[in-house]
Picture 1: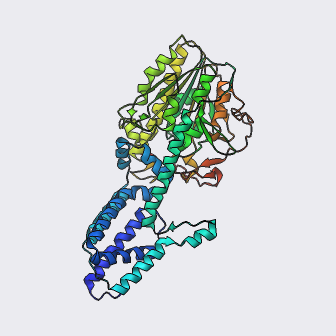
Picture 2 (picture 1 turned 180 degrees about the vertical axis):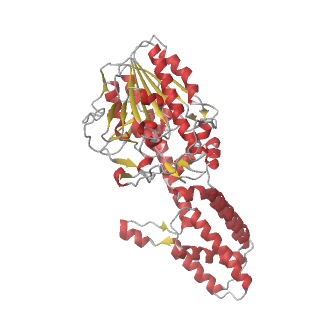
Picture 3 (picture 1 turned 180 degrees about the horizontal axis):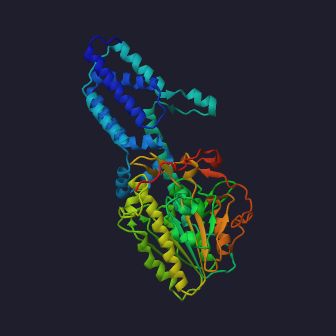
Length: 520
């Protein structure tokens, strides 16, 4: 095909640029042959089927502009992004938009601009070239069934062209999430089959689940700002090498709070910490600032609703954009601790903690500045959690009963734009620090600070929970003394966003650059 006039060359370049930007925004590996193929196909449409062409350009512009922040950061659609779509509300979407970097916004803007300019493209291509271009488009869009047959022994058309693959991947992961959601609803309706043995040690057990805290941003783990003064001075058992099961809440907490068959990786959702404690005779409480979903409850909130008493501050919302704070949970905790009609209790407290936007957690306040406003708020949110733990301990001491408190975070984060005024922490699964989290145990009879330096993994939290509470069951793995410095097997495997089991040790570091010192 020859383009003889300059204006036609410009039109082709405009459309080519649009397709190039679109391919990048969808998060797939850039292949220029696919870009040229789809550009040529659109050129065939531009003059012969103008209405279809215009609708196609408009839809692709909207999809590309919306997906750009996700595509540039997390890549092509995966099961984690689809799950996030299931469990994300308007407030959380607005918070995500507020975290976007200028690059995201500029990229989305250019997609819209070149999409608009592409609407003006209209180049007539004769019959034979048009047929040839269409044929090439089909070849590059679909891998022939014979390839699937040779590789897998079955016929399956595999979409390769990114723009078509995008819709195929969303459909595939949507079907997967839908099937898993239906499975969750069935599993959570099952009765547990615990047969526990209880050895009483404390009257009250308080489990505090933090949110999005990577331990190297805590003073207790070497961070230079004093944001954990209470934990620093307390005789805690500090786990220095604890890692989460996964890098996001929805992937990390279910395998931690429920019984999982380590051979098959099947999760027994009905056999969770709440049903275990209830079967052992403890009165159970679940207080959450993470919300209870409307319509289709998340696994975590549904586990919470198994408790004898539960309260979600943000009803219907995953979180409430700073309208509720973790301190609003204190009256519920106080009431539970003060109930003298019960002897043994398990009180689970699920915090919003340091969830992005961090400044929404701290009402835009912070004591010390570190590199950016968002990081300063994040550091302050950890300090606020430290103060919350101090308040819970004070209330526990005032009851006159014995108690033990265990605090851990669900997952870590990635440190982006280090040293810049827009530095922030975001979800990711590519670094060790996405899994490196704090875990502390503090009890009414604690006398001195101890450090657990051996690796412990959130996939075995049920074993740690059993050891901590003294509630044992033959189904809970007990091959290792978790609250000790004994070497335990199988502590290095973690789950990424693709739900694949990977080796934590193979991941690179994402350390804090202390040479980028905080400003005053």
